Image 1 (cartoon, rainbow, N blue to C red):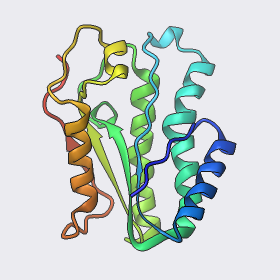
Image 2: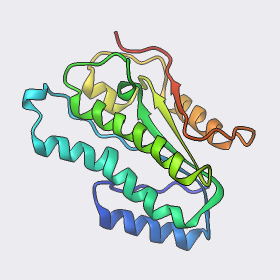
Image 3: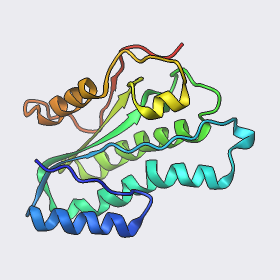
Length: 181
């Protein structure tokens, strides 16, 4: 197992990451796209540049990285896209998160389309996370204490990724231990 970090808003950085991965491995079993960038501000103040910056990381970078990895991902492998319950239909929405929530909704739709396009080879699934006690959450909701810590959520994501008995494809699975109220 190898974890590599990259700037998903940079196509050059994504290419570098792919080259490093390819040197290390002939093939990849699992790609977990766990990227998120958030700017909390009312829609009227959320400029084109802010929307673009958020979509560059949350959608376009994820798509570029996935496209890069597809040639070397095992046919029985899987791509797991991490999204937010804020991107789900009929979930509670919060003022100031128009760009973030809509970008996470785009990740959900992209996952569903890729699952159809690739027909289970590899599998594509999406895990929609609720509140996790991260720096990003602290900035967005000062003073709020999430019920789940990053290490616990990471374990749940890894358990899903390594569950060989699960052959789900194109699913959006909600992992939430309580929403902000």
